[in-house]
Image (cartoon, rainbow, N blue to C red; front, side, top):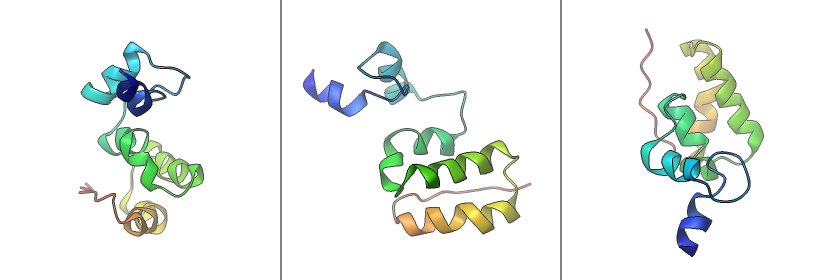
Length: 90
């Protein structure tokens, strides 16, 4: 139980362990993109700061254009060494 608390609390951005934390950890947050869910979940620890997470989140919310990704998102993701993303642009 202790492992569950320390591993999954704050998945829903509120203090303490909740059913929503467990649902997000094991089922995912489906109102987000896969990349958004990853950086707001278990992969967020590989970003150096909340600023980096905000830059990527803003890119996702602003229609996910390739040129914007190349300018802002790609350097962060490539530098992390852990966030490998397969991105498809239309």
